[in-house]
Length: 253
Image (tube, rainbow, N blue to C red; front, top):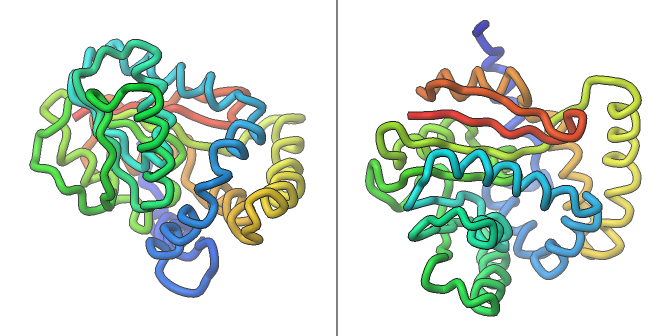
């Protein structure tokens, strides 16, 4: 692959912040703590439920690797972890980590209500400094979380570190459609409709303005595959979803 523009990646991941008042990591934690109560509703509402279909697609890919120990990074309210159990991934354990205690509180309640406490464990943790030994997991997943990393390359390296040899990482993330009319419709919806409704429901005036800004600056598609290869992933590939609104990225150790 061609060499990636490292300066652009550096700028996009560090300057696009929710409140532009401090470090990105601290601001992301603050933002998700504040919107945790409305996150699940808005997530499914804005995507018209398509995000559930995307998660199921990612889990079908993960099933091919038969992982038993799975790490769910930026687990949030544990939507991906819960869907993995419901979709019969058949993992013996799923550990979810997130920087936001507010999101984790919602997630723990959902895990308990569904009776999955023996399989899913949620704990607070930093994706760029994971509290696990090398080679601890057969696979990791990240759903709509990597664009919130303060240091993208460090986060990708850290997740690779905790994978066992031949383990796999599966990343689900928003991307930028390239073709008419999806590109135009997606841009209008993300820039105008979503921030207005998000502000009204979540009471956070910046959270849903930050979302389209972070997507616009994130190195999607081939650029993200370049980052994966740069930090050591093998057999990387990208699967666009719904006309390029989101993408699944797969990389092996």
